[in-house]
Structures are given as C-alpha cells and as structure tokens.
Image (cartoon, rainbow, N blue to C red; front, side, top):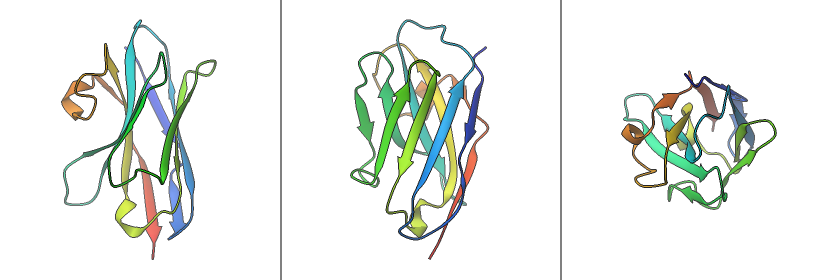
Length: 125
C-alpha cells in the first residue's frame, strides 16, 4: 500500500507563490504517473498537473499552464508542484495521487489508485 503525504499548503496573497510537496512511501511500480488534483468548495475535483516518473513527461490543465510547474526528485521519491502567480480561483484542497502504469487518461481522477490526504491552499485577493 503506497502512502502519500502532502505538505506546503497555506495562505498566500494573490500574485504570490507556494510549493507543494508529496512524498511517496515506496516505489513499487516499474511505470507510474504522479498527479496533482484540486477540489474547490462546491466543485468537483479537477486535474491540475501530472508527471510520468520515468522520462519526466509532464501535462497541465489549461488553467494552470505557464503558472504551475510539476517536478520530481527520484532520490526522495517526492513530487513537487511549484505554483506561481496564484489567484483566488486557485483556492482549493490539493491532492497528489499515483496512477500505476502508463500515462493513458492521466487527467482522469479515476485512473489513480492511491491518494494523499490533501493540503489546503487559500489565496486571498
């Protein structure tokens, strides 16, 4: 059972930056995708970004492209989400998740098997 622990959330002013981290307890799959999703109050959970662990291919939602960057640290088994130019619409609980296998349907939450507990990001305007 893979455990994911997110950190780095908090309160930030509009235009500011935050970096989220997600540490995985183990690496048991030869191929997998790590993704970030978010859920704002009253809304469905939505895809934010994903990275293919081997090779490093990345994908982003249009709403965050150019502002957010996903990256990984192999040695630490950790994925990061650098968030810049934050605005009020970015306020949400952010979750990291693991999708074993290839990158097919990386944008669908139901493709992911393991989830972290979430970390709150609040952007004040």
